Structure formats: C-alpha cells, structure tokens
Image (spheres, one colour):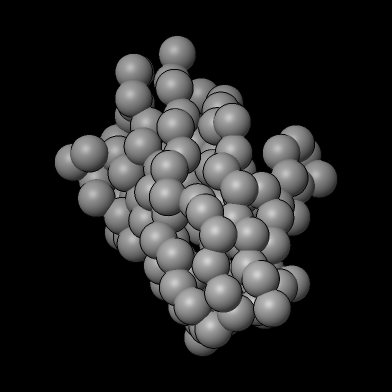
Length: 117
C-alpha cells in the first residue's frame, strides 16, 4: 500500500508563485510515475508528470513555460513550482502515484490553489 500526501497550496495574487509538494510513503517501488492532476480518476486532467528512473517530465500545454516539476527519488517526493499564476489556475490539485510494475495507482486528497485577480 502507498500513501500519497500533498502540501503547499494556498491563496496567491495573479502573477505570483506557489510550490506544491507531494510525498509518497509505504511500499513505494523504484519505478514509478508521479503527477499532478486537476481531478482524480481515469479521466483526470493532467497538469504535469514526473517519472523515475530517468526523471522524465511532461507538461500540459496550459502550464508549459510557467510550471516546473521536479523530484527527489530518495524521498519519493515531487515538487511543482508554479510561476506567473492566473485565476484560471485556481483548482484543487491532486497528486497521483503510479507503480509501473504492478500497474496500480494511488491518489492524494488534493490541495487547494486559489489565484485572485
């Protein structure tokens, strides 16, 4: 079993920045994909994704150039640096951990990001 916990959400003015963190704990494998979504579930809207081994990344078109995803494999933790935020970025951001070998995914509870105009 894997537990996923997000942190770092909050209220910020347009043009500001926030940094989200997501930590996975429990029986975490060394081959995984972690990502941020705007809603949980199979039809979740992806924001950004980070995979290990290799540290590959993926971004949705709406956040390219503004958001940066990174990871600390030793701690099974990913970070989402969100810059130049706009009110359209307001949402609950959910973290997802995917075990590549067992093909099992786990969701966090979500963290609220609110951007005021």
